[in-house]
Length: 247
Image (cartoon, rainbow, N blue to C red; front, side):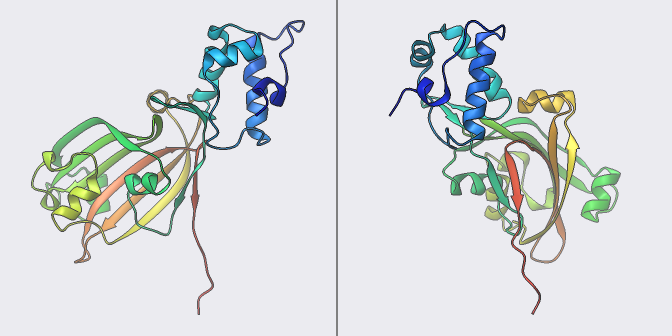
């Protein structure tokens, strides 16, 4: 295969734009025009530096900006890849982990907090629970490979789980183990702008575009057992739903 510089164009030291910005712009255009396709692997930084006749620091700075913009992802031990936008089927009740594994991605979580408490007024309304009802709260960042995809704030009735420690990596696996996995759900999606804290956690831009998904999960007996608010990166996540006419 031809060197990457032959595919995206050489850099020009005679113009005033810094070299890292030139390289960043060239790679961005290559991604947007599908010269570099989703999941394509980029050459190692040392090879890119030699190919474009720039320093490795210049290459790293260019790639860092594209990673922050969600156009590239770094996979530990594998290298840097063109990010593939993730599609979430809005018509199927699946967990984040199940979605990622179905797409060949490695899901993982970084816990922000696990806590026991009683319902807030908002949670009581959503869960149709009485004031003082015990709940467990699970807050975490969800990753696909090494790319942060979403911040998840989940609240479940304490009666659905024996303890906070019952949840390891997957909330739905734990709920299923104890016979309380939701069998249907209502989901609401709306566009939001990330706060500075959310943007930092997701490696996104402050006030960057996000998607808030609110989910109410219903158990077999029809009661509401789960209330989850998930903030997804709008630049790398798409939601799709299959529609049909009624018969």
